[in-house]
Image 1 (spheres, rainbow, N blue to C red):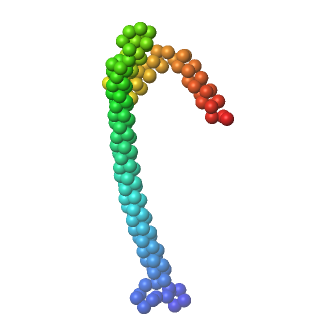
Image 2 (spheres, rainbow, N blue to C red):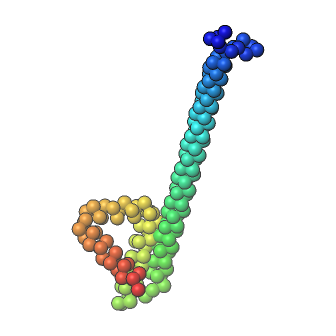
Image 3 (spheres, rainbow, N blue to C red):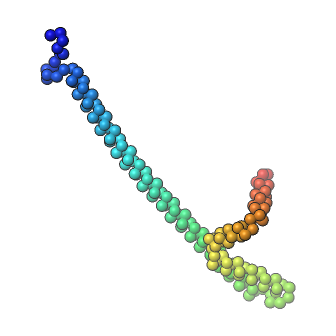
Length: 155
């Protein structure tokens, strides 16, 4: 009887009970791991959805701001055209002042028409094309502007 393992009241040995406990712990651990994976997956999906929503909203806001800026530039262009017409109507017709008034009015009307028709996107495209055609002068102008800004903000 010294070699026989002790039996519990259910007829199982302590080794079998330990194995059962181990199996149950492994099953519980598997269940917890599976549940954790599900939770992580759900949280990841929610985060992706939220990020997508935020990105969409930011895009819409940026688009709305761009349209408002284009509208403002278009309004500025219309105002400049109107001012050019007013200068032409109210200014002198002949002489040195007449020719100066006519030149200023023409310039205002032309610039106003350009701003009204092209907007910010047209200005950006024209500026890009100008820089592509003249890269060295554009670089020098950029350096000069940077120098002037640095001087102005240094004091």
